[in-house]
Image (cartoon, rainbow, N blue to C red; front, side, top):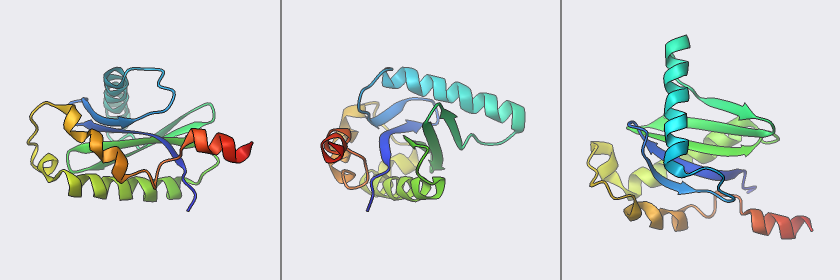
Length: 136
C-alpha cells in the first residue's frame, strides 16, 4: 500500500489541535488550528457549507469531520482525493476507537494523552526520510 498522507492534524470543534504528526513543521499546531477554524468559518459564511479541502501550490489539504473532530491531512496533489479520503477515514476510525471519550466531548484539556496514537497509524503515513532514501 502506498502511503500518501504526509502530515496529519486532529482538531476539535473549538479549533484546538489535540494531535498532530508533522514533518518539517513550519507553523505551530495551535496557530494552524486557528487558521483552519477561520477558513472553515469563512467557507461556511460564503457557501453555507463545510470546507472539505484546499490546495496550496502542489499540496492538497483534505478535511473530514467525524463526531466532534476534524481530521486534516496534507498530501501531494499527485494522489487521487478518493485515496486520501479512504486513508483519512481509516485514521479517524482508529482514533475514535482508541479514544472513545472524544465522542462524548469529554476532554480533560491535556493533549499529551493523544501522543501514543502516532504508533497506531505509522502504516498509513508517509515517512519523508524513508521516501528520500527509497528515491535516492
